[in-house]
Image (tube, rainbow, N blue to C red; front, side, top):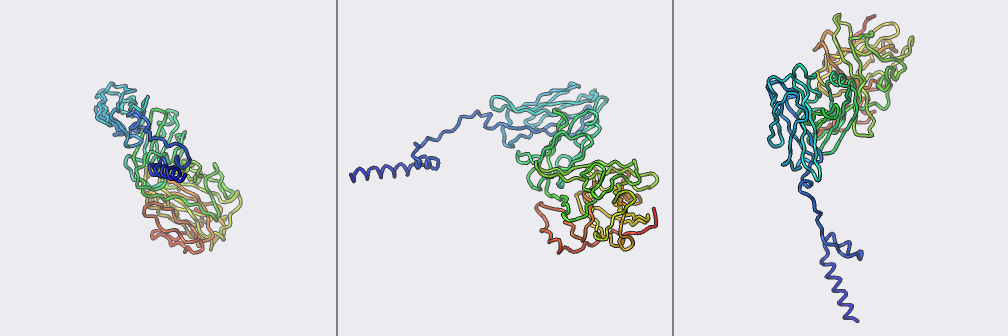
Length: 447
């Protein structure tokens, strides 16, 4: 009996000693150990690309010139040895020459322009992965240039990423805009069906990893650019404030008044915009102000009435104004920004703000001097200083507008590699000092 027990124990030791990491669970559970099996996978599937992205340069071809296209696969180490390019739409009968992952289209000198479509395809499993890409050649039959106006290839951008497209082309073709931001083969932000006149910024985390932005207008007109997003400076709405406007309503603001242009000017276009992040995140809204200098020097900007007609808004308990600003994607700030408060007697107080840099920045303005003379206001105007304007036309963005009970404004967030320390609690933050070139405001009896 003892001999049989000893033999069984030795057998178990041999079995346990031979079990590998994958077999150990099977032995302990009493199930028979299975041999290691490697699935049979076709070589094209092992190295196949799930997606293909195509970039091109220049943005707009010219007769007699060339357009170069280059493919980037997802995943980036996918096998592209069997990659092939083919012409899908070629109104001029040019030549498409392939060299590895690149192809060059040679444009005939007598080409009258138009839209050209090239398809790249690579085998994968029993089928293929393909992608079509369209570019334009200038001429009598050509459209209005590149679809994506900003950002440019290899641009260093600050998140939220500003984007701009050819509104005339999108409106003419009656197309919708689709946007997608990708990192390491994963989609970070995706938007579909944007209209020609819409404004949007794409909020993504800062990262040293390569970032790809794809813009499509229709199924066969896509552009992809490679970006560097090392810094993020985002709007931080105030929790406790007298909010004037967060641009969630079409024309009315949050304080019982209305939003419009200064003096009802028709030289200014106001377009609501959104800062959009990952799916499920609440967007932050802003206003894009398209500015055109007036021949007579009259102010051009936005006007917020602070109360219903015939009334005024008391600001004695809110002696600070919080204003978020950012230049548009295709220009610098058109000039210094003026803010003007008007009381119920028609007296005005103005203050100049100098905005520097391409990112969102919060400007905190002490309106204590205004409150010493007048404790309430009827309108707030935000416009470009005509005398110091840098360019005759441009776009600037205005974020949430609020009056604060004290200088508790939160600094813009920077979560990049050199992010600043966390701001102190509200009751420990000192009152802000005015910028060196900002004035203390000036009074006038009327306009």
